[in-house]
Amino acid sequence: MLCVDDDREVLSALDAALRSRGCQTLLAGCASDAIALAREGHPTSALIDYQLDEAQDGLDVAGALRALDEYMMLALITADQTIADDPRLASLRVTMMSKPIDPVRLWAFLGERAVVSVAAQ
Image (tube, rainbow, N blue to C red; front, side, top):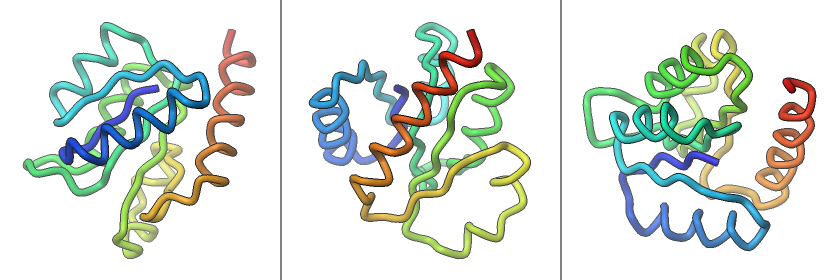
């Protein structure tokens, strides 16, 4: 799973939580690293923070990832509820998760990821 967040503490916590569930993680602190890691590592899913400290936002990253892999499961993590109205969410097939992340929702997303991975093969 690719995790994209410019906050190292958040990335570290996400990494620990996902690894405790048996996930292999790729960690990126910016959009360009996320895209490079996706090209090299071929993740089946990504958790992307919306608010990145750069010109691109998380939906821009989701768009780049979707262009690389039409089957990748994408989730956008944000505290900004107005993002729910952004048409890019639907067109890119991105699941929105509110901060703080609800563990039950995250584990459900992981379960959905496993089903989609098998179906895509």
